[in-house]
Image: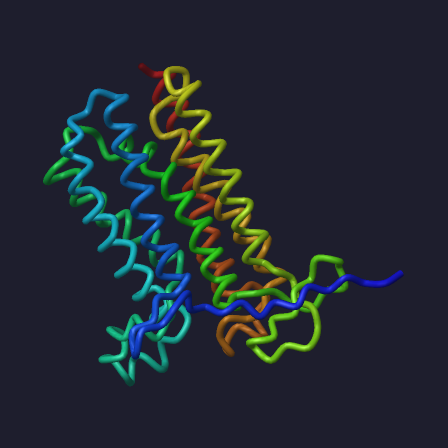
Length: 265
């Protein structure tokens, strides 16, 4: 049987004017924030929350996610290098963002937003914010695909990708697509539950479902990913999996807490 292999040689740049390059990854980031704002605005309007509160949440989330993702990469995946080159932590244009760090950054930013701006509880905000965040996760993985980065180990499956820009000559698992499609399903599921079931679901359930689903997917896909840093090569579980475990536990905890809290009230 002939094995179909997909040669992938996508240009990460959309266009370039002199030294200025517009990249697919940056476009997907911008699209994530734009659509996220539109979704949150629609949700706030549906829940009769002043839409002006959605204006500032975009700034909080943008700063929290970018700073958190950058620091997460520097400290979780390449601490030895960045501890000796601290100034390069600021060189975000060189690449290097970690989703777990981004998640932590968003939580911190949301905490300050809830204290300073919002009229709603922290959990109420989380239940709604996880909807656009799951869509953003899809776009980020598509950006990784366009950059030919964060892909998997060798495979003979018919949808294996040969990432030519990385000098690969054999097909590898396109793990960006695996994760991206899973996060798109998560976005659709959360959106459906919010629109159809929010009056029946206890506060905190959507947050728990989001964390359990997303980081279980991340944990499982990591088994077929190539190591992102040399120190991971001989580890039983890599850094992405280690960081996913507490997030999975938090997801289960949120769901249990949500139902117990509703039962008491």
